[in-house]
Image (tube, rainbow, N blue to C red; front, side, top):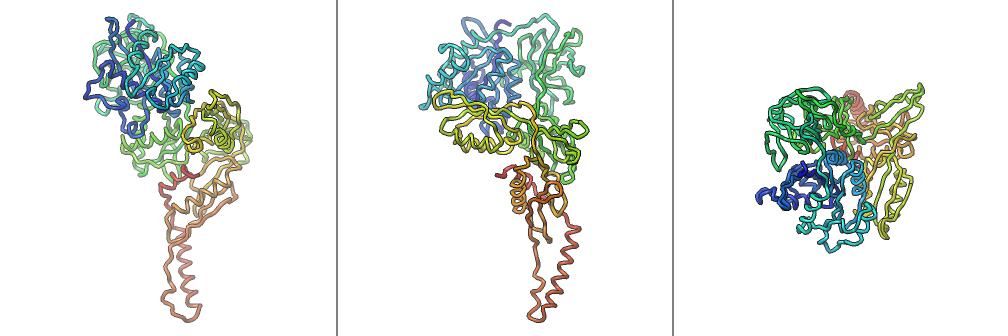
Length: 595
């Protein structure tokens, strides 16, 4: 065990984690030339297209130094705030972390939050300065920032370039010297922590684990501690670029187990695996349960695909434990699921993965956050969906979730960012100058305000220079109104939203204007109204397609024309009673992109 090193790579988005991982794999000759490509660990099509890491990826490398062979288990993690749950799981299965900082950009918001996650698990931190070959690299300035943040010595900071491969050997030596070997005993009863799982349509569910104590042999009967299910270890092994079967994996190793599990409920991330004949006394402390931030309804386009959607979500949940869902129904859209996501990017990725991996086309409702409603009977109800709101007479007050938002930016954009945060009901809490031209500002603001388009607007007003991170700090009372959208006096529950009262009028007006553009014209007038309770606050009309019934009347008395127009009017009225309005999918999506 003394020759095993488990470590992960943490950094802000786009600071070069996956590129450094590529160089490490090349330096240890883990990949042949045929297998190597840029960002080799980003195996999903979506990751390669968007240029971001979505999933943590584990891989084992062999490294030779001073006549010894070391086994290095590397986990490459995502950088975006929406995938911080992946990072927390990777950190729970390591003893050390490479903290990578871009020499051209310096320390960013995600660098700090991922560092705190790692320090919370007592990981050994190795600071690495990346992209030192760039013309814009500020090597000495960024080293000062790292020393201020970590309190380490300047000579402990490693300088490297993922592009040219400079400094990679020093990183490997530092991993061997500084990262502690895993603690554990091969002779104790088996304790293995599940940190990830994937679904394979031929082999069932494959669970990835890290062994804390004990030894696992092929063919042994294993038990999942939390739910008590028992399986045979049909195949076990370690994770290289592909899975490498082995007969025995021991304490300190990171590996996988295939035991023909078909039921996704049997494998929970954070569960402990032990053997049936010599079980352990207690489970390993897993990771905390995920807390979704944004809720939205996912509905199948065809109502008979409901069960297919359920199966797809269950399989996707194995691979992404931060996705939560429960069944719900809507008058406009039929049966579907209320899903919890960690943010809007997470929601977009899930939607795209459902389409690509499972061929499921879904309609998404307006995303919103969860609210605590205090009733006049002193009850507290948690609401994820505006349609679950009690009658206004029964509500005492509503509390909404608040976050602490941390923005790091150049000083020249500070004014723009402050005005953006204040329009989003933000309250400035603190402001620290990291260097002469970089400032960190902390705002307290409602989560609902950042769900829609905050991230995009932040990037616009700062020309892409601001970085953003947030965490939940609790619930605070707020003045909210339920905004309903009515089509021909019928409410469309999928478009209703809970919104801050002072913003409701503007939002309702924009929503009606947007829907008027998107709803196709019918044979009758369609009234689009936004209402709070019984009060209509905005209205637009989609004009009817009309046939010119008076075309055949050349001259003559006006009463002949009147008679024909009245006849047409009666027909339109009857049609309006029986006709129903189809809301196109683009209308549900347009609400998300409203400015």
